[in-house]
Amino acid sequence: WPGADLDFFNFFLFFPECKNEPGETVDDIFICALDEAIDGPGGILSYSGPFLIGEDDFIPTAGYMVYDTSDTSSLIDNGLFEDLVLHDLAQVMGMGSMWQDLGLVTNIGTERNPNYVYTPGTHACDQWQRLSGCDGCPPLDNDSGGYYWDKAYLQNELMTPYIDPETDKTRPFSRISVGALDDIGFV
Image (cartoon, helix red, strand yellow):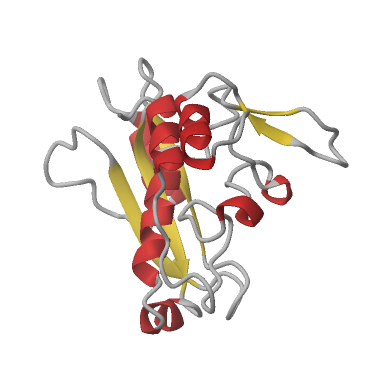
């Protein structure tokens, strides 16, 4: 198959439920969203991330979002499913999922005692300083491998690691997260 995009073909092998390629040219990003049994009620609500990355700009061109069938109804009933979809969309775009690959996050701790930090001098750090009045960069969640903002500091922000249905009635996408998208290359 001369000129075939084998990476795109492999995407459909990895996610056979996404049987058909898009019917038209996708010039931004293609996302396959699926429901499947992950771990039963509670626990993992979804998983998501980029699958294909542009060779020149390192911007994701295809990704996946998979939702636990045991949790979807309760999230919809609580008005939180849309927030979860937006959270996963941001991960497909590289939020958290590509930070380490792009050099935006490093572990200055050890494997047993991680301490993930966001790279100083970036847009996310500038926005953290403007919003919080603190020096440094936005605190990251060490338990998740540095893929999310630390919930202790950013509470119900959309890109924290989990949703608490009791306290997270609104999940804003903060200017810090917009700064992180800028760091990835989207803004």
